[in-house]
Image 1: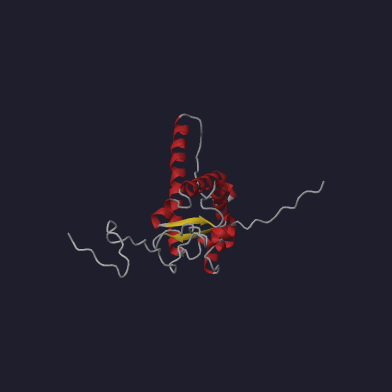
Image 2: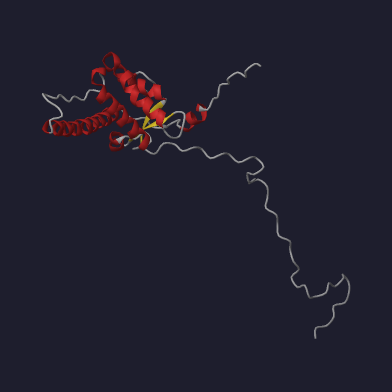
Length: 214
């Protein structure tokens, strides 16, 4: 039995049409937002790790010097990489593309496929930072050569970053009414039926003598 071929579904076209004309975020705004997220991610990793190491040293569970480093862009520090991916993924999903840094700068990452970032798209975007960091962070600077200001991690997750300072992201357009349902302004309104001035007075034929009034 022959299997049916897999068909291409152009589901992205409608979403892209909805986002047409959305104002894109600037590179300085994106850079500051990323720096804020990095600071929050590093502090939320280093501070609990230091407290845990201090308790472990005092309890005698660990000995010697303990070095705590937050460097998610090198695989030697895989613990910080896992925390960075988890932190950015959760921030993207909970904020629907608006991490803490992006909320402060009033920008947002929006999907070109769906109206909301799914958990997988959030993880993809977080992992995509590693691809953007390759070759001396050239993936970040592709912002300046892409017509839609997409970096490498934007293209991996199929997202763009828009600013909310000049208005919200365009909402889905309302469906157009069919031709039969649209009101026709050219057709005249029906005229109300005229009623006789005095319905009780009998009609007098032409030429008949008028009766005297009582």
